[in-house]
Each structure stands twice: as structure tokens, then as C-alpha cells.
Length: 352
Image (tube, rainbow, N blue to C red; front, side, top):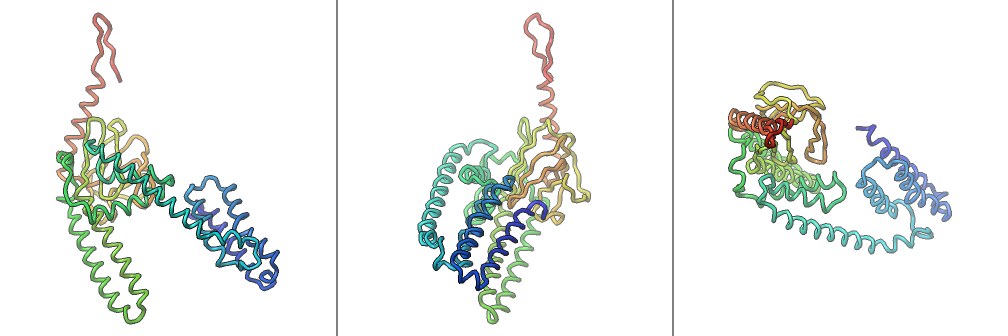
């Protein structure tokens, strides 16, 4: 983890060093040196970071430049500073940024309306529509995934109340797992904890009490949204693939020809990079299906996390019917691929 962000950590350390040096009275009283240090902090160091670290995501670069731009006038004295002219127009930069956000919101609504028109597609559900629309509107992939998680969390918590008609043949994953009791228990514990902490802190530090209360409300919204998403999003077995849809996890499509084995499995497991379990609470949630893949597959988890496992664990209600349906579909696909194509009077040709 540290190795991945080592260049960003070095950049932050250099910026802190420049900021600390600029606080020296000798530099503060010398306008030329002050301008030099401001240029180092605002332009040169971020530019070098951009040039030398092109493997970083585009979002990271924009975040770095925007953060430096916002911090600079608070770190460096602007009086008699060459860069004072730039920050006199800061209000216009903020307006331009707000207009940019409004444009992205408009793009999202436009893409969302287009996707809604295709809602009759069986693989499409609200999560897929919102996630796809946000990805088209926001160029930064990880940021788009993080916003999609939060947006869908609020959507399923407050707006989604009815089941989709095209999910009647799906396989649920909550009726027999006891996952509802786990989440409801955690939510009740969170509510009692929030009330107790708020009552204890409100007379001592009102600001901390309000912050902790807001965090508890945010956690509660996420848990309710995820639990309702588990209710409304079901796994699908189509003619050529399995569609795994669990809570606020991103949809995963597994083609039959990529499956090495699929079986009932309720045993313990070791956490490795080769394994992903569709469960927000990890081992607190049960599993009863193990899918072994021929090759590693990319799985997008909440908060922009990506894994490439070779084994998938999940829970499915009526697991026997699920496995029977999957194996039946796999056999149908194999039989279809092996059907001989025989032109009249020609030698049989088999498609493999």
C-alpha cells in the first residue's frame, strides 16, 4: 500500500518542507524569496510530480493540483507576492469549478435517462443504470465508483421500495442466510451507541458530539441501503453466463466457459488475493457456493477497490436449484456448441 503511494507521500513531504521553510522571518520579509517559494509550492513541485508519475490516476493529479491551489494563500503571505494576482481571481475559479460540477450533473441525468429507456434488459437494474451513467459522466474511474456506491446507498435507502418485475426468475441471497438479522442487530447497536455517545458528549464538546452523530447517521444510511439492495438485487442465470448481484457491490458477470468448477461449499476459508467473497461483513455473513475460475477475473468492490481473484464465494437461497440450473445451462451451451453443421452431402463439421 505504501509502495503504491510512495511518490504521493514524498510529494506531500516536500510540500510540507517548503511550507515550513517559508515561515522563516527572513523569507517572509523578502518578497523575491517569498515568490520563489510560492512558485516551488504552487507550480514547480506539482508539475514535477505530474511529469515523473504518469502511472498515477488522473483523479489523483487533479486532487493534488486543486488541494495545492486551495492551500497556497493560507500558507504564503500574498502581500507583495507575484502570485497575488492569481488569487484575486479565485472566486472566478470557484465559479468555473461549480459550473463544471453542474455540467457533470447534467451529463449524468442525460445518461441516466438514456439508460432508463433500456431498463427492460434483464441484466439492467437500478444499480447498473446509476453506476453506468456516473461512469460516463465522470472520467475518473475510482471516483465514479465511489460516488456510485454513495449515490446507490441513498437511492436504495430512501427511494427504492418495490421489486423489479424482471427479477421474478432471479435467485435471492437473504431469505435463508440470516443476513437480515445480522444487519438489523448492527443497526440497533449503532443507534444505541449514537444515543449514548451523543448524550455523554453534548454537554462536554458540542462539535464532537454533532460530528459523531452525523457519522452514525451516515453509517446507518449505508447499512440500510446495502441491506435493501440485497433484498432487491438478485442473482441471474442466463443462457451464457451467471450474473452476480449482491447489495451495493458492482455487478459481476461470469461466462460459463470461464468456470472451472461450481459447487456447494459452506466451509472455512483463508483470506488471499485469489479469493473474493461477496459479503460486506466478511466472515460474519454465510456462504454456500464456491465458483472456481479458469483464469483470474476483475472484481470491483465498494469504495473503488479492485481485486483479481480466481475463486468466488457467495450465498444463494435454494442453492440446490441454483446449482442444478447452472449445470443445466452449461450442458445446454456445450451441447449447442457441439451441434454438427452439415451442408447437404458434406462432411460433418463440429464447432468447438
